[in-house]
Image 1: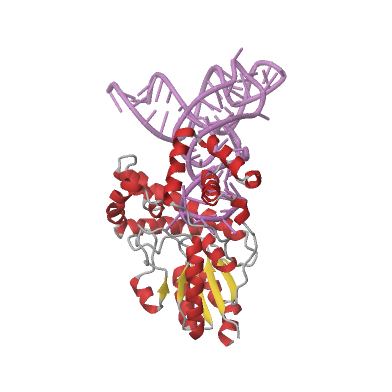
Image 2: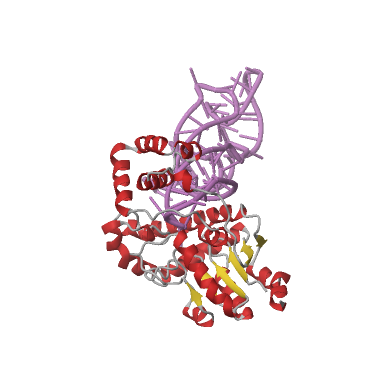
Length: 304
RNA sequence: GGUGCCAUAGCUCAGUUGGUAGAGCAACGGACUGAAAAUCCGUGUGUCCUUGGUUCAAUUCCGAGUGGCACCA
């Protein structure tokens, strides 16, 4: 009998965390977090890590597991999750994966192409060139190194252009030659459920949750990371709920403005998540977490 | 109570020498295979406070009303 990976996703603050714990208890199984920020030990309050109480009820993976100093990416996540699933499926028919990082979820479900790891020196050098020579110069590099990708690449987006140049220069082969666009086959079933509350409801929840985070000591948490941010701007700290405090600490924003910005940026983030998930036609949508609990999909899985 | 200023998008405001209007932010929509809570792109959503007058035509000019702000009492 095939095993099932039950994915519960949706925008931030939609109620995934509590719901997935309830469902995991029903199946007597474990939870894999698909959240690119909750895995960092030093960021607990601002990333809305599940409470100790919830973590005690169900075993979670990829929560608070690495340091903000560590490099991590979607490919590493794919690899580690597949290994873990092999083990978990020995004793569990169903495993839950919960989180809002769409790229990470896709990496697990469909795989992503093999690329060499980027040397940080190469990236830094390109960042310096972007500063000194401007973006157009790098676009011309891409045109020369990978004319095919140049045709389809978003040429306004430094992240895309830089990535392609990095891979092309490091390997001596065009970036596009690594992109196979083929879905990898998995030896387990995948069911994708997503929560998408009514927009105003979601935004109110976001705003309230940010206020709660502030009361819980988000400012102090951010403050402990500020010197690291000033030192070398690790990507892990380029995170909603932290980068706004860094601007406050360096005098760019007032405190109340910073808190407003956290709410705003979280709303923007939620919208981007919704856009990403809407493209995935395998997802079954629900307005509220409670609707998922009552759904027959879950009970039919329980029977099997 | 008197005088002055203001009233335009969800907010802050610009503008129309009279021909039904535009910025920023918000909001909305989208892209996205190793930065993904990242990065990038697109869209104006409007009884121009109400009401009389002048005019071919008023959001714009004039009068009155209402609301707000400031100063004087």
